[in-house]
Amino acid sequence: MIDKIDFEKNNGLIPVIVQEDETNEVLMMAYMNKESLQMTLDTKIATYYSRSRNSLWVKGETSGHYQHVLKMYLDCDYDTILMVVKQDGVACHTGEKSCFFNKLL
Image 1 (cartoon, rainbow, N blue to C red):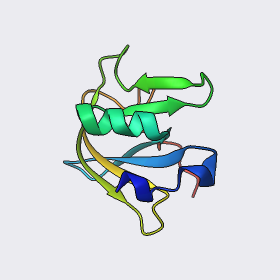
Image 2: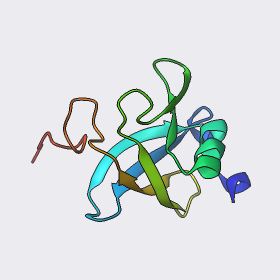
Image 3: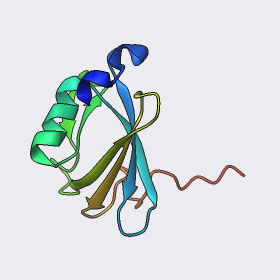
Image 4: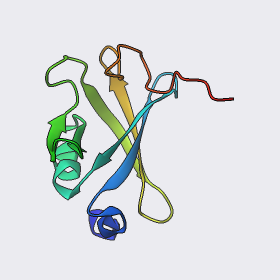
């Protein structure tokens, strides 16, 4: 299935929507490259690609707030991932459970 993913559509990256298994709450959105996706599949711990640092990062590596990957789905165009996780602690670097706490409408 990895070979079907269109990494080049977004300069070698694919957006990842992260959802909590128990509540279905959307926790965050991040990016993966092919290497971070393979690491995530191998370890079942969410690993992302940081565009600002230009490097891989394991979610929770410094905070202890790991994301244990339970399921992963590709959308119909093979260019976005939905990842279902068991979240240790909070997902947002601000200390909020979800990154989506700023109500717009």
